[in-house]
Image (cartoon, rainbow, N blue to C red; front, side, top):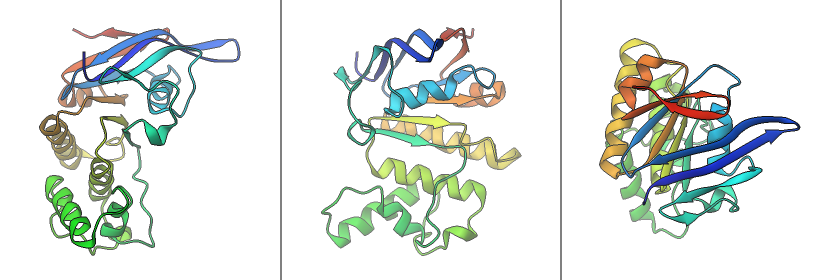
Length: 215
């Protein structure tokens, strides 16, 4: 089926298997959350899907396209981290421009950046100094930049964990709505069961290198 699929994924560090024949299917527009303690392999799963970690066995497929052996930049997968990676010498527009394909004319670049900011609720932020942004605003800029690259799937490595209360809930809701609107499959890892339930259509628990769906 189209979307994101992981089949029989095994990742080992030395003699220790971190992922052990793991399977996961995420449909277009579906959001999946993965819960589990530190060190259980949640981030390793994201790194392997993104192409930052090579598996011993298994497949990673996007829309039935085998990307297992492709480098990260050729997979079409976006990745959001716990803290937004923004460049302080560039304003918001300059940071967002890094997500755009090369060769676009200036007017088209401006149009896409403005549209991306509206999508994440930051209309008019183009000239803002990124060092003045709140944590939530910084994550919205990081989300907008990831979306400008037109990914086929999005991976989220606890991007909401540094935020508190209402701001955290608002960003969870915004991100979920944008992913659904774009029909992007998404995998979100977290320690927080409440956040997982609020964000995801399905929630899994990782144990022994495999996933079990929470009912």
